[in-house]
View 1 (cartoon, one colour):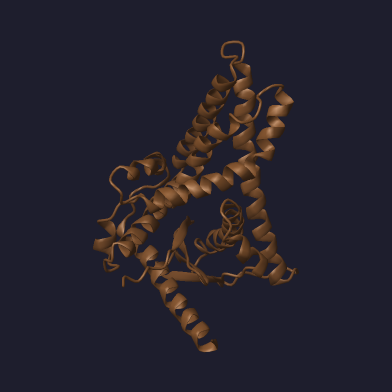
View 2 (cartoon, rainbow, N blue to C red):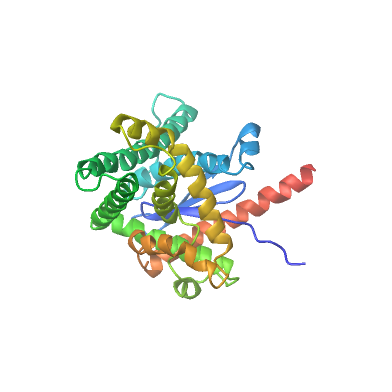
Length: 311
């Protein structure tokens, strides 16, 4: 009987990569002195949330919230540590607030940042499409144009930030993250050469999810009116959780069918967007990604053994 491999995910951070498993999340970053530093954050979830994770459509919302909260803490660690002078005291000075309060604050900021970005991407195209109503007055034409404006907004934003040196390096680490996951899933040894031979694209990427929210939104919006404008705006806001939930399920489906000859093309739009959000990493960046993933695998094995002993 073939044993199903655990599913791991990750994200790029400033000068490093974060990987997450069932029990732990780990970030590895490259410091100025070329050393690698780690940040560990156990996954903690309330029993009530664990139950919701098994409910289709709702599980996507929970996954997004948790990912945003955890990701914000890893991003905060990376941004504070990567460029500190190794000759100086590298300890981060604690603020008067407790460590727990600080972590909670960063997590809340991460979630709010995601919500704000989603509102921005959702509502701006509505007003832009409304300006074209004298030329394209039909409901379906308006929804399609709204979707095109949303796509253009996303592409312009991603391309613009990719021109900055720091974001370009983050996108390289994003590519390294995907290459490591692909190497692991293809049962290859995690060496620099093996990882570099893999694709920098992956079906289960958050970039694909962003694109699917645009495509799924076009179909869902056909179920509600576009007039008057105030109702259209209200509908878009109320439907954000619905669009996110359905898009998450679409992402999961495209990942499951990626090895089926015809159905694999369902995930191609998301892969095309990743051509913008990932870049080819250099060997040093791949080494950091491998270090992060290997550290996660060790911690996951320890946690699994401890849970078996408790049972």
